[in-house]
Amino acid sequence: MRIGIDLGGTKTEVIALSNQGEELYRYRVPTPRNHYEQTLAAITDLVKRAESATGQQGTVGVGIPGTLSPVTGLVKNANSTWLNGRPLDKDLQQLLGREIRIANDANCLAVSEATDGAAAGMQTVFAVIIGTGCGAGVALNGQAHGGVNGNGGEWGHNPLPWMDEDELSYRREVPCYCGKAGCIETFISGTGFATDYQRLSGIERSGVEIIQQVEQQDPVAELALSRYELRLAKSLAQVVNILDPDVIVLGGGMSNVDRLYQTVPQLVKNWVFGGECDTPIRQAVHGDSSGVRGAAWLWAL
Image (cartoon, rainbow, N blue to C red; front, side):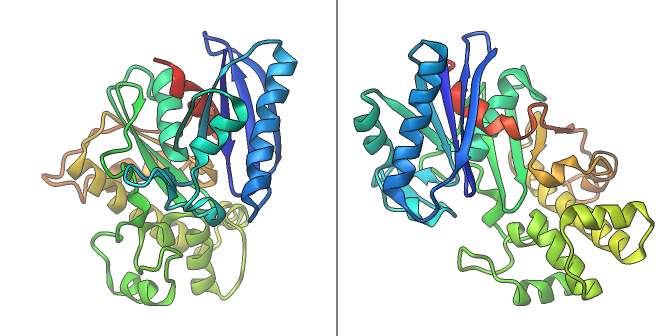
């Protein structure tokens, strides 16, 4: 049995999978925000719950919104900032009495979809989370690729490519939490989509509400979505130019916008070097379960 933990900013979830990928148990609790020791306790309790419910002991993989530094062994780059600078794997290993594998949550998405999802059987998978924030992960031959610095897939904290005048203005108005300006995350996260709509309309609405306005043929909502599609296409074209993956998989709240799968693949071609791009762009099969399933599959090999 394999146990996966998805440690998110608002919820922490556990899943137990059989060796064949069958879901045996699943449970979630609120994440103890800004409290490291309580976070450790919550993860430990979820593992014990899964093992009690199934009557089995399992391997444990954890997906986090950051990464373990290969230099220090401590968490870095986590937007759940109370994790940064902490030896999360060592602390969990001591509490659970076994080896723990930890990977970035977007890398877990990539592993999940490469194992038995939208990218099953693909060698090079680029998986994107476009939700409250924006991140990405890489799976090579079904395994998470973190890289020598642990930064593999940190796509959202590169500058939006080929900025026009309005995007340069947006860059100055909307700084990223990482301390830099112009990050892809500030443009194509769900938060960025809502922010751009508010800039255009003066009205604050959620992403879901904006899409509803698009369906009602509201011209400002349509403009916000078309701008979003172009920015997503430019950002993915940059990935194709560098990595040229076999498939791009989208997860997170914005991945539920069906129109993206018709518009973005055509727009990408305008920005890929040479103008040719047949890279499939697919929605994650496992939806919001992909992260936790991928954490469990960190022990697949």
